[in-house]
Length: 188
Ligand SMILES: *[C@@H]1O[C@H](CO)[C@@H](O)[C@H](O)[C@H]1NC(C)=O
Ligand SMILES: *[C@@H]1O[C@H](CO)[C@@H](O)[C@H](O)[C@H]1NC(C)=O
Ligand SMILES: *[C@@H]1O[C@H](CO)[C@@H](O)[C@H](O)[C@H]1NC(C)=O
Ligand SMILES: *[C@@H]1O[C@H](CO)[C@@H](O)[C@H](O)[C@H]1NC(C)=O
Ligand SMILES: *[C@@H]1O[C@H](CO)[C@@H](O)[C@H](O)[C@H]1NC(C)=O
Ligand SMILES: *[C@@H]1O[C@H](CO)[C@@H](O)[C@H](O)[C@H]1NC(C)=O
Image 1 (cartoon, rainbow, N blue to C red):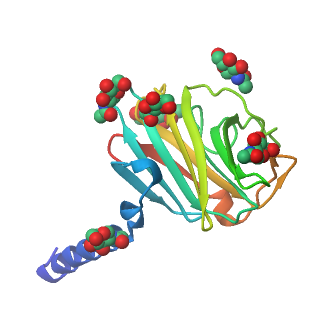
Image 2: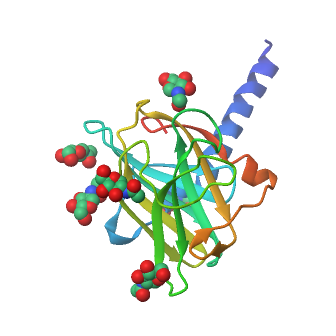
């Protein structure tokens, strides 16, 4: 590698570092009830962010999943303990009721046409709640410990309608199909 290309490499690394760090928009997010989260990720699709605190002694993760959404829509964030993608994922879902209050509960995605009804997940979930403000929905919960330690396959989703208190099918746009990834609660 000659000096010019080495300089170019350093420059590119610096540029990409700068782009990555300046693109981290979640770090200044604030929360109600004096909640503070140590870690966050800007998720690449659906205008979504995951914030969390990992408790090393209990293995519990306190999360806040926040995404842009219209008031008639729903949001969901899930861990898939057995594979990648939607099927088998253990989800937290939230939407706004007609009276303006938020509903949030865990549900298991067992097929491409899941019931979306509340069920217990394969891991412990507590303290689940949700908020809506100015086209942003946030789900709060404490999950875990998880079977696979701190590394998890996660999936997130959003849909634009609710019927009889059941979140309805989401779109199959590229963003809705690519909204999955791997997460390390320890390193971010
Ligand atoms: C976060 O807040 C700090 C301190 O106010 C500021 O310097 C920084 O630009 C903000 N970052 C983003 C992504 O808004
Ligand atoms: C982890 O959980 C334990 C038991 O609930 C608690 O005492 C401790 O303060 C927690 N640690 C952090 C960093 O929150
Ligand atoms: C469990 O973690 C390992 C890495 O430690 C990873 O390779 C594997 O895919 C994970 N399994 C699941 C089901 O998340
Ligand atoms: C709002 O509607 C939901 C669902 O019908 C109900 O469970 C909840 O109790 C209602 N909340 C208020 C404040 O009326
Ligand atoms: C979840 O588990 C708890 C305690 O094991 C039980 O009381 C509750 O009915 C279960 N909920 C559902 C929806 O199965
Ligand atoms: C969960 O909720 C209980 C009761 O409201 C509260 O005492 C506890 O501190 C909460 N745990 C976390 C990790 O937020």
